[in-house]
Image: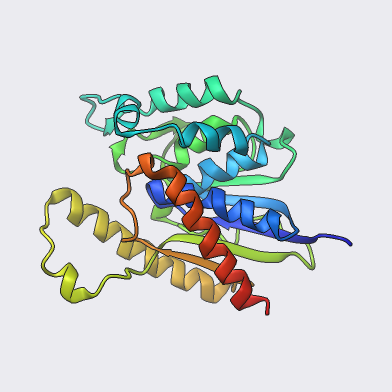
Length: 262
């Protein structure tokens, strides 16, 4: 029996993006063929690992991370462009998975970033995989931007957090999207009593902006299957919960497939 093809779109969301691994595994377990991938931020990272054929090794590495190892991957800097260089984590990943040219990968792939100078969306579907990933994950004020070809590239979530229009799709392909920054699940009455600080205000404001952009994108490019994980389900930097996040992505995908394709 011929497998049904999927054009897969993966959203950003920090550590919640690890759930994309479980989503991919569930799609394949149910017999779907992932024919192309597009992603933003953490979605670009996981999508790039899959499209290059190294998702299993990446998953095993992620599941070894604890709080101390996560902190050890953070290379703080005094730069005015951001708090973290982002070189240490990329180097660690390159030791695990060698860099590759995107156009030579077995599965078509595109990462989304934004040019800070013009405000334009930048689609990275050629060149080095890690340069594309590093640009797409450049969270403003956290990671230093990537300077490339006269552009200053930052996290693609600022312009296209769920890039439904950037995945290569052929006639008959199912459009499947995994949004790990979906609207908040907690009761507002509970959230109103939560303590706030600069970091929480910045993150929540960014999440609200991205949620509204995503909702508009879903109206313009309606996915056949939309997998959702609330933005308040896991913290942005809880990478030490990777095994749990993979399972959460698997279960959310199983539920979405059952509801959308019944």
